Every structure is written in structure tokens, then in C-alpha cells.
Amino acid sequence: MSTSLFSSKITGTGSYFPERIVTNEDLTKTLDTTNDWIVERTGIRQRHVSREGDPSEQNSSLACRAAIRALEMAGKKSTDIDMIVYGSVSPDTPVPTSSCWLQQKLGAPQAWGVDVNAACSSWVYGMSMADQYIKTGQVKTALVVGSEVLSRMNNWEDRSSAILFGDGAGAVVVERTSSESPHRILSSHLGMDGNLWELFQVVAGGSNMEVTPEVYAQRLHKMNMKGREIFKVAVKTLADYAVRALEANQMKLSDVDWVIPHQANLRIIEAVAKRLDLPMEKVLVNVDRYGNTSSASVPTMLDEAVRDGRIRPGHTVLFDVFGAGLTFGSMLIRW
Ligand code: UT7
Image 1 (spheres, rainbow, N blue to C red):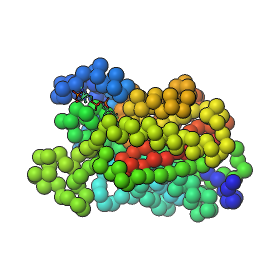
Image 2 (image 1 turned 180 degrees about the vertical axis):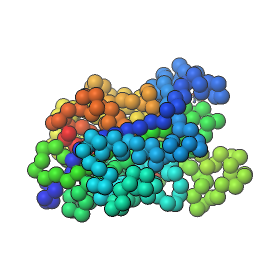
Image 3 (image 1 turned 30 degrees about the horizontal axis):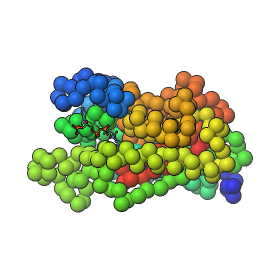
Image 4 (image 1 turned 90 degrees about the vertical axis):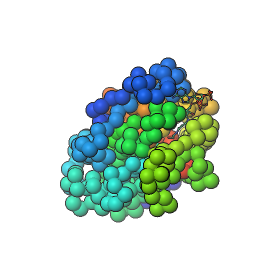
């Protein structure tokens, strides 16, 4: 039971994807793969890929377009934002932060901001942070973004990972509401296991290792993963974190209208649903059209389902994520 006077409520959602679509068939021109293999093993049919060198398709530019749509839905101006929380593993630059870039592009002069990198869990981590600042009364209106240009970190020569990732941005406006409000964030549960760092990493590009010509040749600055091992941990932890969210709210899965899991692979999503005895009709999926967009996967799916009327006022929605690190998290909301 919350002791705060305040709770947080999502009042606007938005998303944006770069124009260029790369289909599985396109990938077969450079990779030893087939459309059938990719669809059967991942459920992915296409992904959107930003144009390198186009200022309108930088990470923060995608986020800016998503944010404008979220603000429009919320009936807010950019000058109303107190706090920006920007989830991403693929920032425009190491310094300054993506939240700084977004503040400048959006025109939100009084907002302060912070970047969150919990890989694919970043947006749920960021939502939880915004929720805490709102509950303590320090922030009234937050913008929480998940935005990625993974195409620049993708090893396009590695067929086991290149097929998975896509670019895109999702944003939500989160506002203060009464703790008694039925429409609010009900709970969040976050976790991680740093012992599993080897399952997914970008070895170079941080302060451990510069990107020298040798490092570049070995593609150590690109995403590298142990897919099969991640798959197993993902299924178990997604199921565990869904149960944690339900137990904390004395709910059963039948009380939940929609589950939005991290969109990494349709087979992971189906395996979690099976483990939980959750009908797939309640699970929202966009991985077929966008691939794995990391921190953007849940907010973009949320935006789609809010705009097409699947998510309606009073619905209970569960966000359930995992990512490199490994990181995990779930959040339950009442729309
Ligand atoms: O946000 C978190 C990020 N990562 C993930 O969530 C990844 C989770 N893991 C996965 O999604 C799956 O493990 C993959 C899609 C990456 C791979 O699917 P899989 O069913 O686990 O395949 P596998 O790694 O066990 O490989 C099976 C076979 C191998 O060939 P052999 O050794 O059996 O001859 C691979 O070399 O499939 C081969 N293979 C491919 N074949 C055609 C791997 N990638 C491809 C490909 N096209 N793109």
C-alpha cells in the first residue's frame, strides 16, 4: 500500500519508426539465411532501419517525433515537461546525453533529464524512476522515452543476430495523479544479474577498449550475444517477473487485460505465455513488423494498442521485460 499522496498516470503515448523497411528477403542478399528460417525461429518479417547521416533519423530525432505525438495525446506542451527519462543503448553520442539532445530538439527548457541504460529493460526502469519522482512530489510531468538506432550497433555480417534488431522510438507522458486514482501505475519490480554479462555484450567502445582498426576488423564494437542461452533465461525471468507483479497486487492473470512483453522473439513470447498458462489473445505483439527494438519495444506496442482502441480506460496492462546485463523488470498499470 502506497504511503504517498501521489501516484503516476500515463496520459499520452507516441511512437515513430524510420521510413526505410528492410525485409527478411532483403537480408538474404547479404546473409546466408532465408525468410522461412527467420519467420519460423523469431516471428520477425521486417524491421525499420534509420538512414545514417540523416539528422532527422538520429536516435534523439526519432524520440522527438514520438514525444511530440505523446504530448499531443496528453494535451501538453513541451514546456510542461519537468523531467525527461531517456532509455537507450544506442545514444546519439556518449556525451552529451540523449536527454540533453532531446530537450534541445523538443524545446523543453525547464526540464532536467537523465539517460537510463538497462538495455531492453531501459524503458521500464525509466518508468519506475519517473514514478518515484512523481510520488515524492518533486516532479509533476515526466516524459519517458525508449528509443534505439540499433542498426549502427548491429553486426550485419552475423546471421544469428543481424536478423533480430530494428530501429524505432516510443514515448509516454507520465503525470501526477491522486494515489486513490483507479488509473495509475500500480507497481514496478526491477532486477538484474550481472553474472550473466557474457550473454550479451558490446566489448569495445567504452573506456575498457577503444575502437582501433584491429578492434573494428573483429567487430568488437558491435552487439555480440549467446542467443540460445539468453532465450532460456528470458523465458524463465519473464514468467517470474509477471508473477511478482501479480502477487504484489493480489491479482491473477485473469485480472489482466493485456500483457506487453519485450519484443525479442515471438517464440520467447509464446513460451512465456505457455509457462504462465496465458492465452496469446491477451498478449500484444509487434515484433513481426519491427523486430527487436530494445527499449522502444514496449512503449511502441503500447502506443499502437492505445491508438487502435485495444487498450481502453479501466484496462489492466502488464509490461514484462528483460535485456542485456542481464536486466529484468515488470510494471503493472491500470489505464
Ligand atoms: O533483447 C535481448 C536480445 N536477444 C535475444 O533475445 C535473443 C534470444 N535468442 C533468440 O532469439 C534465438 O536464440 C535466435 C533467434 C538468436 C537463434 O534461434 P535458435 O532457434 O536458438 O537457433 P540456434 O542458435 O540454436 O541455431 C540453430 C541453427 C544453427 O545451425 P546448426 O549449428 O544447427 O547447423 C545456426 O548456425 O541455425 C543456424 N542459424 C541460422 N540459420 C539460418 C543461426 N542463425 C541463422 C539464420 N539463418 N539467420
